[in-house]
Length: 413
Image 1: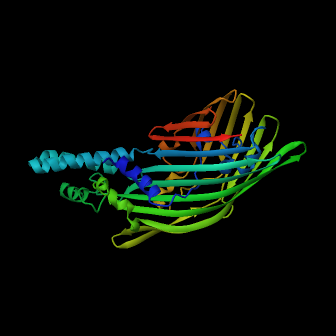
Image 2: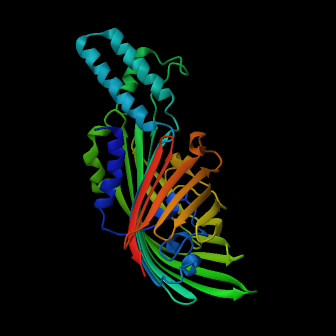
Image 3: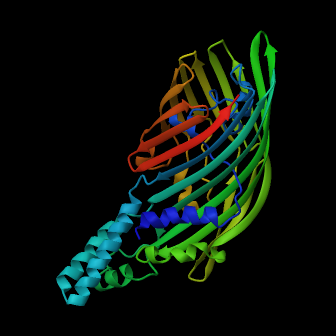
């Protein structure tokens, strides 16, 4: 089994070993196809996650909407999966050389493994899975929605590296081989979080100086389960059964918070939106396992986040820009994953063909400080929406070694 299968299995097993909750993830299908913009473009079906104030942004004939969707996203900006796969292949060649008594080939494999490990420090892989469902109901100047999400966020990185001959003069071939083939060095640290959210969104539209102003709130309850696992990169493909063990998972409990949003119709075509998440913050202690008998722990923080958006729309085109006003830390407790933080600038467009089909394109860039250059690469997105008597939205995103997709369906009347 490849390491990529292992990482994805972390996500899948974590999902199905828990109750079928439902919770917080930044995107849904329409938003993803438009590069992640949503704060000033969301509608009755999607506003519960993007900006509760936009619930009043329904089309005149839409009084009810239902949405169900599933998305998967994997970030491997630093090619960590390829590095671990290569290490395992080289270790297999080393073992074959040992069995054949070929010391030259054995030494060559060890040096090649050392070259990979010397560049692996700080690299991370981060898969995410999200399931969403929402029901929206609109009235003349008031709207509400019931929403649920199940989001799994996971990450892996390698620590406890074996010695390097290029930086340590005492690292001769014997010591290098001893450490590089030991399961006590080059440890893949895996951490995951299942965050399950149930929310009720309420929005009210007002007229202020002849402009439409909407205010929305979403009280929500979030249930959290964490997963941690440490294993040598040489054996990680053999330890799949360990992931589902109870000692690897911890029920962190629940917390209650509130999201709030505002939307101002500057003109008939231009909307300015603001979404603020987690007005009530919280944090949780997470057991990160033990190293040499010493217990490790970290804190999982749910901080306040804010995003601003502006959109232009007419009957054929919607164009929008969103920007995170805050740097957002990953929902992981291990400080090894701090460099997975984000602060996105996103642009997107939707072309509407007579309300039957919508073509969507977009792009986003992570503007956070202290992240790798690969993580700053522009991510491109595209999507398609169809009305077939029901809604069908398909979206995909890609950037280097990162990719994602979202599929959702529903109906409205």
